Amino acid sequence: MSLRNRIDKLISVLTEGVYEREEAIKISFLSALAGENIFLYGPPGVAKSLISRRLSEVFESDNYFEYLMQKFSTPEEVFGPISISELKKDNYIRQTKGYLPTADFAFLDEIFKANPAILNSLLTIINEKKFKNGTELQNVPLKVLVSASNETPPPNQGLEALYDRFLVRLDVNPIKSRENFETLLQDDTPDIEVDDNLKIKTKEWEEFKTAIKNVTISKDVFNIIHSIRIKIEEHNQKTKEDIIYISDRRWKKSAYLLKASAYFCGRDETNIADSFILKHCLWSEPSEKEVISKIVKDSISLMSVDTGVSIETLKEKKNSIQEEIKEELLYQEDVYENVVEKNGEKCFEVKLDIEGDNFKIYIPLSKMGDKKSFEP
Image 1 (tube, rainbow, N blue to C red):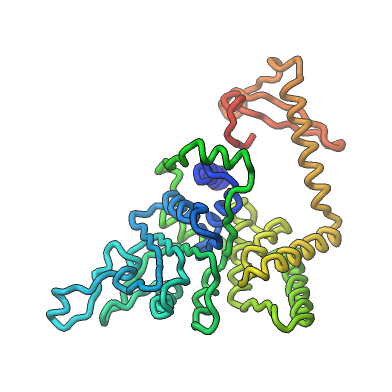
Image 2: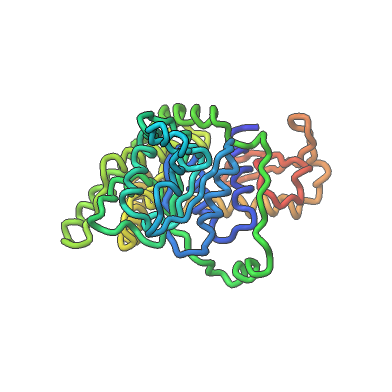
């Protein structure tokens, strides 16, 4: 099975029985594959913890840590209690098993409600994957830290460095669709079961990070990034209060995520479509989200015009192809004459003529009538 097919299957599992969270789940999964931390922004009760738990289940992981932060949270509740037996020997050592320093995946809910002393202690864990336990530096296996809150860090608390480590920042809001809301009330959200053969192994995850670095950033994407920077600078010159600041570190990590998007789509170079992810990486305050989203969209549209590629035209062409396939599948009289064998499996052959280009696709008969997505 190709990596692309495997990723698609895992996305299907991750999004099963979840409504209006598909984009947040997909981008969270991409971020986790790239080893980048995630911030879920939204009110309580909108499935933020569900997203985190499901992410941990598609990776090879035995240790998952989850904690609801609050004003009176103590280091013992996050990093582990002090060992009494070691304390008697004048050793200040924590029992970290089952706590954040031994977790592969972690979810910290209402993260900014905890006191700054605890939060700043997370920096070493996030940056260096190390935890100082007494006089020893303990290796931390943490792949991804998911945090959540309905607020951004309060000013003047020294939390800017920590907040900047959460590259992907995603809105998670209450369900809007009436139909989806009724389904939510009617049905239970299912527990997911992930085939061990599909799970991302730790060794693979490490190999992914090396492979992603070899992906090339295309000239088009560079131009989009430059356009975004110029537009942000223009915005900042017009206002004295709502200044948008993006660190060089955030730009570098954002570029890495664009590379990851290309890699897991089976490409060795980024393209214009990857750039849409930037709208989830460049905002810091809620007031910036709409501005950033518009700047990213405008910059991509500008580049689409410059390269002679219209996003709307691409969408229309996609719809045209889908309608052509639908017509071929539903209305051909000689359906049985179009069954051929491909790769040892009986397939339905579809002949297409799209804007003068003739080509064929082959759909396995075993997939006919199946509602799950697959690649012909």
